[in-house]
Image (cartoon, rainbow, N blue to C red; front, side, top):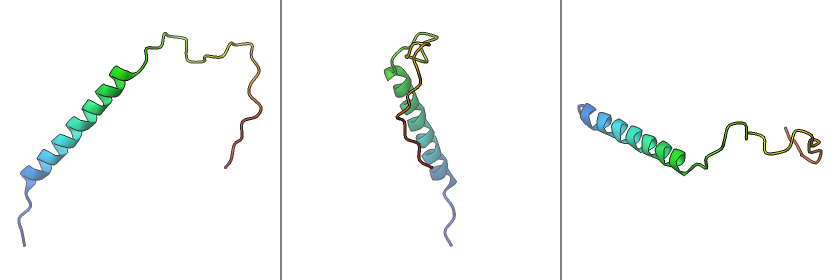
Length: 56
């Protein structure tokens, strides 16, 4: 039976972690800047949408 190569496994985990971190950094850098309080773009007095279909 072959001996496990722990160094290779660790290197693969580190590369995956680094790629995930870089992807997250890219998403944050490319995200549009939103001012605080702009979470809801509709005015407060507008009625809710009634034509939304929800399927379970």
